[in-house]
Length: 72
Image (cartoon, rainbow, N blue to C red):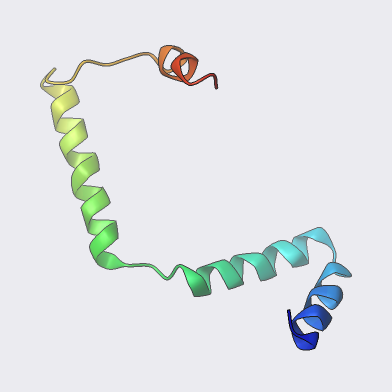
């Protein structure tokens, strides 16, 4: 890690938790920019799942059963 990176981190750690959270949010958004194609794919998938649910084409599994399978 460069000296500049270390200096930025040291200064950021002096900020209060809300200020650090704001900075973290900005940095993460700069790395993972929104992608309209991905957003549309998720919207389409959600709509498909709603339709399957309404038409009883999907077997619903209670969340406690699903989480229990994975020890959550």
